[in-house]
Picture 1: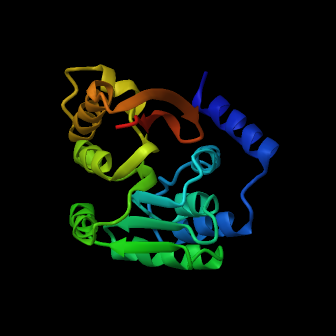
Picture 2: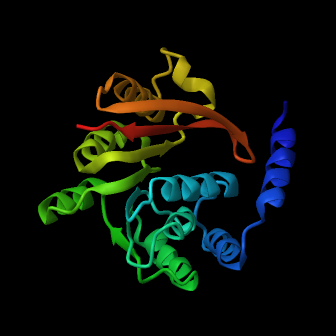
Length: 223
C-alpha cells in the first residue's frame, strides 16, 4: 500500500465515525496557522485515546506533550465533570495555543497546562504528592521516553493505562544499527516496556494519514 491509500482509508474511517467537530477542527487549523508543527495525533488515534480513557473510567489523566491541545481535548472529553487532566508542554507558544484551543472546547475547568521541561514538571508533581493517575499518555521528546515510563510506573494506579505514541518510527526500531537519538530512545522504551513485570503491554503498528508508525498500550498490573 502507499501513503495515498493510507490517507484515503484514514479519511474513510474519520468520515465513518464522525469528522472533527468545530472545536477539534479549529484546534488543528489555528495551530497550523500559528506555525506549530503538524504532528498532532490523527482523529482516529484521538478517538482511540478517548475510548481508552472511558474504558478505564479515568478521573485523572496525565499527558506528556501538549502541542496545540488536540489530543488533550479528546482525552479531557472522556473525563467526568470533576475529573482532571494535567498536560505538560515545553514550548510556551505551543502551551498558549493549547490553552486557547482547550478553552474554546469548553474544557478549561478540567485541564491544566503546565509549561516547562517535562522533567521539571514531573519533579513538581512528585513534590506535590499527587494522586495516582488512571491514564498517562506519552507523546513528547523520544530520547526521554524511558525516563517518562519510569516516572509513570511510580504514579499510575493498578489497572491504569500507559499509552505512548510514535514507537515504531517507520520501522526503524527494528534496525539495531540505527543510532538516531529518537529511534534509540524509543527502542529503549520498548525494551523496558517488554521487560517490566508490573506491566502487561503490546505495540500496535499503525498506518494512517501521517505515515507508518505505532502506539504502545500497557496496563499496570495489580501490585
